[in-house]
Amino acid sequence: MRLTKNGSINDIGSVLEELIVDFLLDRQKGNCDDCGQKLTQYQIHHKRYGLDINVYDLSLLCSECHGKYRKYKRATGLLRTI
Image (cartoon, rainbow, N blue to C red; front, side):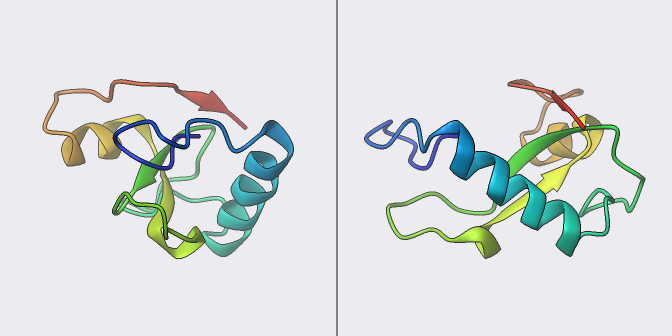
């Protein structure tokens, strides 16, 4: 998971990323944070970037919703499967 746009912190480690995703899935009840659809695949959406972000600055979105935020017809980037 990328924490900053300039890449100064590029890898938080797979164990920490798994904990964050589990927390977000639980908080969002397994649904996309935008459309509410049940997630089978997701992308991690940064509401903001920076060195001081926390889990409340992140959400899990389906690829269609993530694409809307990125102004593409579909999302780019890593699509993860639950």
